[in-house]
Each structure stands twice: as C-alpha cells, then as structure tokens.
Image (cartoon, rainbow, N blue to C red):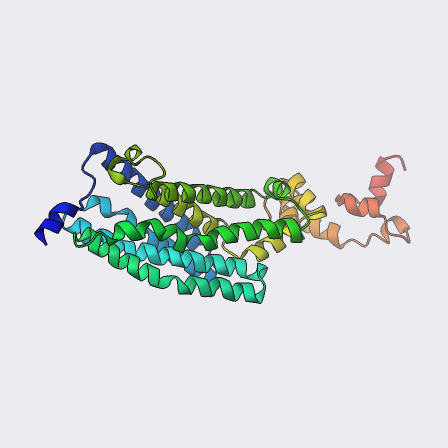
Length: 328
C-alpha cells in the first residue's frame, strides 16, 4: 500500500505554470457561474421547474472551482467531494436540455432522449468512485475512466444543438443568419453552443493524448471548464424552452419586427404596443393622449367617414385646426 501511494502521490499542481493555469481556469469557471446564477435568480419565474433546475445546475458547478485553495490532505478529499456535485450538474444539464428540446421532439424521441440520460448514470457512479480512489492514492482506475467522460456527458447536448438548428431552418420562416441579426439573444445562444462544442472536441483530444501531452503543464486540462461555462450560458441566456422562445420571436416578426427595430426597442420579448405607448406618454401628457385615442374620427369636422390619415397621425390638434393650418 505504501508503494502504491508513493507511485501515485496525487497532489495539487507543484509547478508555477501549472498552478497559474489551474487557478485561472477555476477562477474563470466560478466567476462566470456566479454571474449567471445571479442573472438566473433575478429572472426566474415562480413555480417553473426548468428555471429552478438551471439555478441548481449553476450552484452545484461552483464548488469544484475552489479546490485550488486547499492543501493536502484536504485537497484530495475536497476535490473528490466537489466533483460529485459537478457530475450532478453535468447530468442536470442534460435534463435541462431535454426540457428545452422536448417541445421540438416527437413523443418517442423525447422518451428515448431522457431514457438514455438515465441509463448512463451508473457510469457516473463509477467515475465518482474512481475519482475518490485516485485522489486517495488507492487506484489508477480514474486514468482509464476519464477519457470516456465526454461519451457519457455530451452526445445529448450535441444532438440538442443540431436539433435546434434543424427546427429553425425547417419549421420557422426565417434563416439562421436572419434570426441572429434581428435577435441578439439568439445570436449569443448559437455562438455559445458552437464554442461549447469546440471546447468539447479539444477536451477529448487532450484526454486521449491526441494533443501533445507536454503542451499542458502537469497534465492540467482547462478545456472542459470552458465547455461547461458556455453550456451553462446557453441555459441562462434563454430560460424557457426553445419552442416557446422561437414562437414569441415569430409573433413579432414581419410588421412588428420592423416596428421594433425602427422604434429602437430591440429584442424579441418586448411588448411592442406597450413600448410604443410609453414613448408617446413621455412626449404627450396622459390626458391629451387619452383624448387623442378616444376621439371619434368618423365625426371630426362633420365627416361621416373615417379619416385614416388624421387618425394615424395621432396628433393632439383637432381636425378643423389641422385643415385650416394646411390651407384645406
């Protein structure tokens, strides 16, 4: 047993480069998660399960960004304990992706999706056990299970991204580039999805030693942290499911979308009529605005027809005065 411990001797990064890289990666991850958690809690709606799960995902992921501050023997068991919460957060992300994707899936696809997420949970029990044994200097099992993490963690997420893009292109009357142009929120969402997949691929190449092992100090791999942050960002940027968000955006497309952009009220979740009324109230006193909106335009200046030009002009000058001033 003593010989095994001497052979493994798993400790925190000893080199300056390794400590700096690990501290930077953990600081980046926990800082991003804290900000996203604050935004989520500020915008979540009561009694919405999806919003609560997103908040829980972010909180559980934070703890694994603090083990760099500890020293042996606390370092070893604290790292393994917080890894449990991190693995739960990863599984929660797949459940959240299922809930966001569910309205865009047929029933059999939805059942298959969540069933496979449940079926892979025994692997995470094995991974947690291997992690504890490895950082307790008891077994090298973790070095064999770690390369398979992406296989049991990310296929559902990659499918979610592909399915969202496919549904946008086939079921909605706008293209990807048009959607990103009129909706910065969706532009950030799709950009974060692409970045998360890029870092997933780099993480796989690093743990399978396709990338040169000497390129990273002390075997440290920050790529999964970057992928995790961008995956969480996709959950936070749009809290509701994808179909609800796309349907809301569709409602304001065409004539309303043109009004949104021309009025300077940018975004897909704005009540255009309410925003437009607020702009009028800032210029015209409330009483005058009520008089204008309540005026019977069929009786202005003795006319027995609707004067659309005057009604759309929405000015506070009576019809008779307007006609005289214009020489009519």
